[in-house]
Image 1 (cartoon, rainbow, N blue to C red):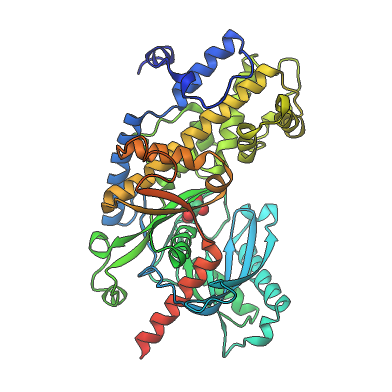
Image 2 (cartoon, rainbow, N blue to C red; image 1 turned 120 degrees about the horizontal axis):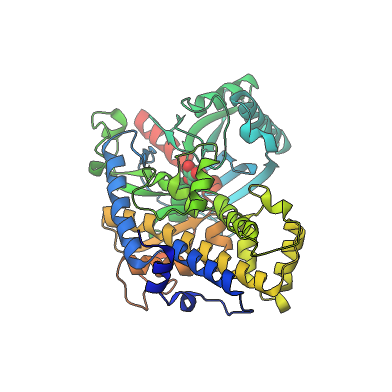
Length: 497
Ligand code: BGC
């Protein structure tokens, strides 16, 4: 291993890579630290290619056998929508901070007021301690909110136990599905740690609570948010090839050829009835490189992993997803404080609190164009009770950039690996999640990195110019989930007739 000083000397262009104009000089010791950090966080084109090659291998292994590092979960979604799907569906989405319940009316080929669907929703804040509670508390809570929504919307009068409302459930965690209305949780991700769900069928646990409340609903499907994003986007945009989330967590789904899913039992009745020759695969590639072979992990990444509820899991996600970027930023700042290089003689107590810096803050720092970076100063004051000097603002801007650029470049690797595996040369990658849609530079950085990996010319590397482009996904966990439920109901109807 070359030392970090050697790395810096090998690549003197690091400052030119930055898109930010310098607003203050850094004291020499801090400048040196920043060079070290740049060497640790920068992922070169060559490295990206190495990552993608290993990534593709792990995706392939997941298709061959169950229980591999990247699970490549079969979703039992047999095709993309035609765009004609219709129906009125209830959906529920267990997000990281909210529980969202919706009614989605799909209008298919007969849009209502120009829209292909009508959506009514209610969002309920998840109680903070639910994330670390028990199965019983989780499902009671969810069934309770579904009940509240049904009565708020008068749906409890419209539907009955004999004529139940179809329900789709977006459960965005790795789950083994033997069929579409079944989902055995492999492991919690995104900081969830609820006892009694891992290794159990989440669909059955929810169903039990729905029945206990006598709610007039029937659970039709359990889906992942990536599959939902792909399907909802394809409903409007037939060029959609992949659905992906760059948010609190990270992951993607695509339509795999049935013959490439070697682990699938071809004698299975559901496989026999598949007439598209494809199946949506929820990759769960946040788990890429759990064996630590190729990703350039820093000591900050290692610490985040060690202190997380599931050490050793979600290695890729912990370096690239929204839940962790703010935390990486915090750990670096804290280290510099401890070295006596920043915020000397100030009380940096708040900086010691894990996850006290939201990833949103990094976006705001990079985005700040206010005079004298007043917004950044205010954020430091409000969030951390710190009053930064100019050089500390300069350092924070550079650091926010380094961390976000690394995240975006890594995110391009997963998509490039799927494209290489499926030999996809063009199409739309429908992306959702706070990092994809709220960070103003994410898409541009992602596109550049994808172009570097796939050897595109400079023009194609610009956002929206390449053959594979990133688009903003339609609402996967509401509309996508409803479309999947409607497709599944139609399949069942056809199978019966
Ligand atoms: C979960 C995936 C999900 C992704 C984005 C990951 O932590 O394991 O199921 O798709 O986050 O929400």
